[in-house]
Length: 200
Image (cartoon, rainbow, N blue to C red):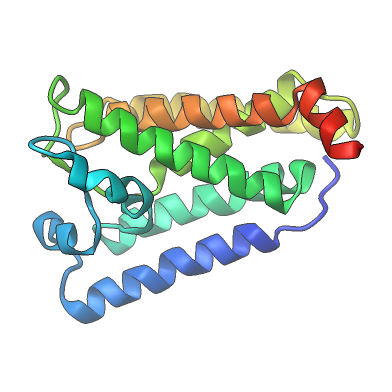
């Protein structure tokens, strides 16, 4: 798969680390309730005034281990997606995955097992995973050998993420929403009508 630039991926990964350093400096790391002050997502007892949390919860992480897992996913999948789509489209997929993840977690949180507070960029990772799967399986037009080499690792990642999604304390709704948001955004970016508009 021909890679163009991973600048956006590196910026996002750096931002995630920087935000966690801020959490630690404030003494908020490790406490879901403390992270509400910084923008953690409420999945129960929320109001319309909490909409902005959809834009912030993905930047927060509970522990270093949590941060490491999500950042690793962002770096690997982000490099794949940004390399094929470009930085602007990568940013759109990240935002689409994050927003859909947050919206799903808020709307479905009352019906699914949850602590009531969600943080982490796993929804973004799921969105990038959806886009990478579509690139490798549906839109393999150039660098076909590279795409074929990615298919097995991506399927293993999908199976792993699916298993993790059903673990206690993990937002299944957030993962499903992120995956759907990433897939929808990627599909829109690949639509012939949008590509004609962008090239005119």
